[in-house]
Amino acid sequence: MASITGSSVTMSCSLKQNQALNRVSNLKMSSLSFKGISFSSIRLNPATRRPTVTCAAKPETVNKVCEIVKKQLALSAETEVSGESKFAALGADSLDTVEIVMGLEEEFGISVEEDSAQSIATVQDAADLIEDLISKKA
Image 1 (cartoon, rainbow, N blue to C red):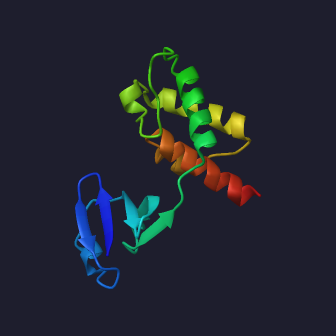
Image 2: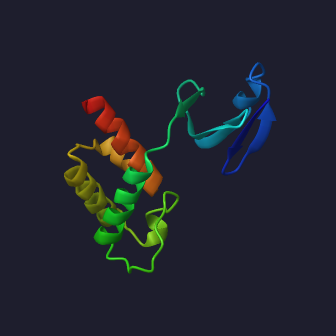
Image 3: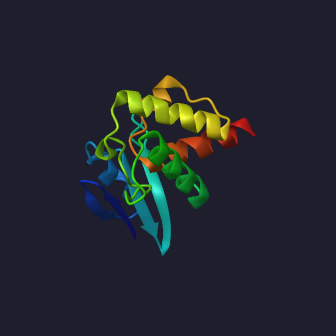
């Protein structure tokens, strides 16, 4: 038995009965725990509506992204920034987000496509994208 939890949906289903996934609407990302093993990021492919399991970024990457976000937004040392932090909740507007992405590109030696940059809403999104781009680069 697997349990899938999303921001607006919680359900349990047998892996053989994947029809339950087809009934879920507006679920884009969730986490999965299966026999005690956690997968922190499961994304639904919009075209096929099939789940894709991705591993969460390394803690070092998330921490570095947090530092860059704090620097770009000139946040105080007391402001807590974590993987779940949303850029908008931290006060970032669209220009700030562009500057954050530019800082990430410079720090990690990557190039982020505009489409990918627009999908970044949280620190974790940015860290996951960075690791994906670095792995493709290698």
